[in-house]
Image (cartoon, rainbow over all chains, first blue to last red; front, side, top):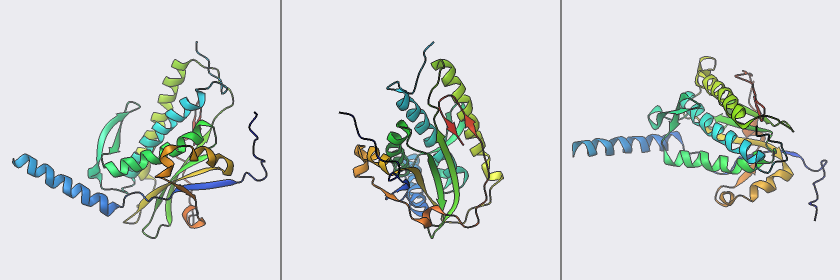
Length: 45
Length: 200
C-alpha cells in the first residue's frame, strides 16, 4: 500500500536539539586531572 | 563506470555515512579550536589526509556519536536542511554557531572513484578552514558548552524515532533562547559543492 505523504501545509519546519546536555567543561577537566594522576602513578610503578 | 542516482537504495546511506563522519570530525575540531574543552583531552589524528584534533574523553565522544546517530536517518532521506553546532555561554545563550547547510542534488552521474577523491579534497578544505577559524573569531567567554541543532520538518522526525538510540537520547523542539543570537555577525568560512552534497 502506498504510504500517504504528509500535507505540506501542516508539515512545519522544526529545529530539534538533544534533551541531554554535553558534559560540562568542569567535568571533563576533572576527568583529565584524574587521568593524568593515574598515568603518573603507572609510570612510578 | 559506476553511476549512482538518488533512486539507488544505497545512495542516501552513502551520503549519510560520508556526511556524518565529516560532521564528527568537524565537531571535535570546533570544540578544540574554540576551546570549549581543555586541549589535554584532544589527540592529533589524520583525517582526509590532514591532521585534526579528536577528543579522547569517552563521555563526550559518546555524546557526539549518539547525536550523529540520530541525525543520520534524516540525512539519509534528505530531510536535514541544516546541522548547526552551537556554542553556548554559562547561561545557555548561544554565542557562536557553525552552520552546515546540507542540500543534495536530485541526480548525479559520476564514477565512484572520482566522487570519493573529489569529496575528500572538498571536505579537507572545510576542515582546514575550521582549524584556522579562530583567527577571524572573537574569544568565547569562559565556561562555554555546546549543543547540536537540526533543522528539519515535523514529519521527518518520525524517521528519527525509528532509531534505537533515540530511547536513551531523546530530542526536543528548540526554544527561541537556544536558537537566536544577540547581534549576530555572519562569517562565511567555506562553501563546498560536490556531486552528492553541498555544505556551506
